[in-house]
Image (tube, rainbow, N blue to C red; front, side, top):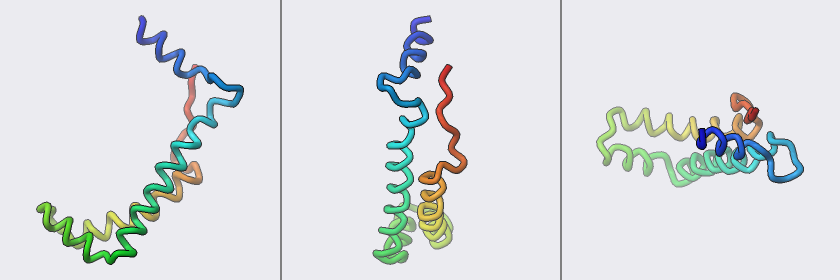
Amino acid sequence: MRLAVLLARLCVSPLPVPANWFALPLRLIVGFGSIAHGYAKLARGPEVFIVIVRAIGTPCAHELGWATIVVEITGGSPILLRAWVPPLQCR
């Protein structure tokens, strides 16, 4: 019962803004961070990252290295634009 009360209190906004606005900093951090990491891997040269992926023993390192770069760059944009990420619904 105490856990339920604590979780209910966390869903209440301590500031006079809608609850959906609390996800905005998290979206910015995760979305922009993902794009920045993907761009850094691409800017330094994909081969450098692929060598690291191969060194940790990942199979198909070349394909997975490129897939990681593409997913980080293209996956950060929808998060910034609120696509596929539902707003927090507290009761």
